[in-house]
Image (spheres, rainbow, N blue to C red):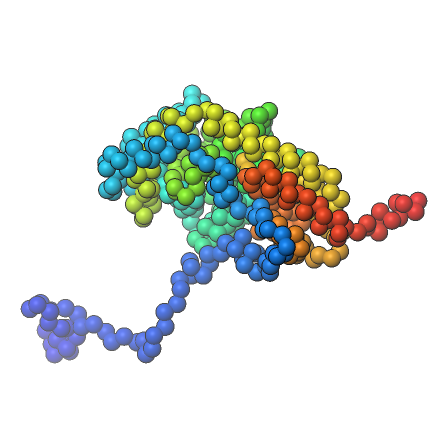
Length: 441
């Protein structure tokens, strides 16, 4: 070995190693990653820019937060609490679980959701830290940077937050308010190309509170089948459906479209802070095969799974929560939705759309009649300033000139809020020039 080669080596513990090249950095410069910079929550982007100064003479009523526990009027069932207490007292669930969840807990979820049309076993279930992580894993396993996904508009903002941070393009397909928020299937199909890696279907819907019929779900499946696009089904509000509506799982209707169904305890069991979600793998004709399953296992290892104590309580929660608890929750949500819908239906310039499930109601604003405001953000900002009522502007869901109301507040608070919204609209409503022309004729 010549001298030049020797000079490029250093001795460590008696062994020769390549000498470390001198750092070219002359000063500190630590910057956030592209992923961090590309992560944006549209709701926060809208709300943080609003000037929210409530009227000091009126107590604040927030109809904006999708957390059913905020006001304390919707506690979870005693059986759910007891299951958690028993899991803690057993001291069996204090350590690490497999990253995909305990086998017994996964089997409990499989048993709870399995049906003849869409059978499930434990191996078809991945437990996650809330439904949000389930959605994250599902997008991550199906999509590469440069791919695109189809997302409902209006729709849950997290889909875009996750996708854009991964370099995945989001294509928004329209929902039709005049058809109770059904999908504009022609528009949706027109967006599909060779880089479309998944179709997201939210049913029941956040923010719309809509519930798709069996017939509509079959039409969605037909489009997905025609273009060989798998479906990510966000079914966190599964079975939170008002009487008179029916909400089959889309997987129970699929003969050939593979589906990753995301759900969890958060909304139906009224415990969003417990962070227990799951992915149900509904493979059809082995299209996902072992690769997608193994991909989900690998991705789950990034954070080593969901809370073990909740996993330990899961079987008891699913098996022992009484039907009366579910029924009472649905009855309350339907009653509050009807109060809100009936009250706002008679307010000039507003057009509420009656929901069929979940815990939300969307209200259209005829901006032509409210010239004092530039848009829905301005409208809802001033509603806080004058009436201390906060509704989320639907621009947060990329759907301007609407606002979303969360219907989980106590009934008397809902009545009061609707009265204040009426007073606000009566103060600012102006007949449009078209209305004046009609009167002249």
